[in-house]
Image 1 (cartoon, rainbow, N blue to C red):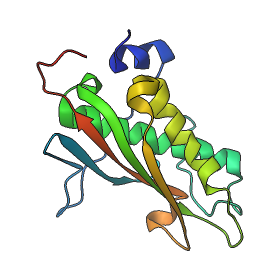
Image 2 (image 1 turned 45 degrees about the vertical axis):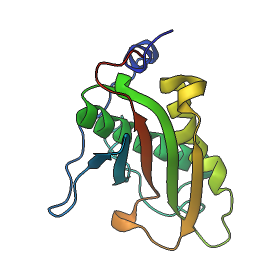
Image 3 (image 1 turned 135 degrees about the horizontal axis):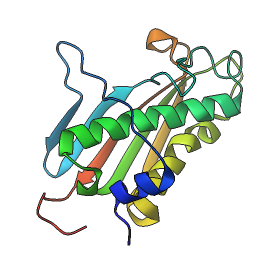
Image 4 (image 1 turned 30 degrees about the horizontal axis):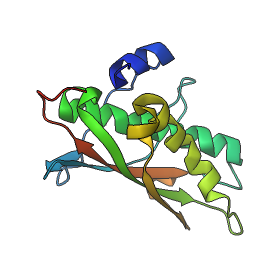
Length: 161
C-alpha cells in the first residue's frame, strides 16, 4: 500500500511552499492527536496567477473547482511542514469550505469536490474521505474564490502507516 508521500510522487504533484501564518496566528496547531490547520486561500497556480473573484461570476464552477484543489495543495504543504511528513496523517477528519459566491450560485458542494477528491487521491479512500461543511459567503479575504481549513488525525512519528 503506497504511503501519502509515495502517492504524491506517483501523481506527479509538487507541493507549493507553505504559507506563513499571520503575526498572531500560527499555520497549524497539533493537540490531542489532531492537527488543526488554519484556513487558506489559493496560492498562484501553475500559470503564476492566483484565482480571485466570485464563483458564478468571475469563475465558472470548473475554474472554482480547480481553485479548491489549489487550496488543498496549500493545506497539504502546511500539514507536511507541521508534521514533517504527510505519512503521519492517520485520517483527514473534516474539511470546511467557504466560497465567495455570486447571488444565486448554489453548486458549492460540487466546487469543494476539487479539494475532497485530492485528499482521497493522496491519502486513499480509507484515510482521505472526510466529513465536510461548505458555506457560501458574500466576500472572502483577498477576493479569494475559495478558502478551506482542515482537521487531520495524526499518528505518532514512530507508528507504522
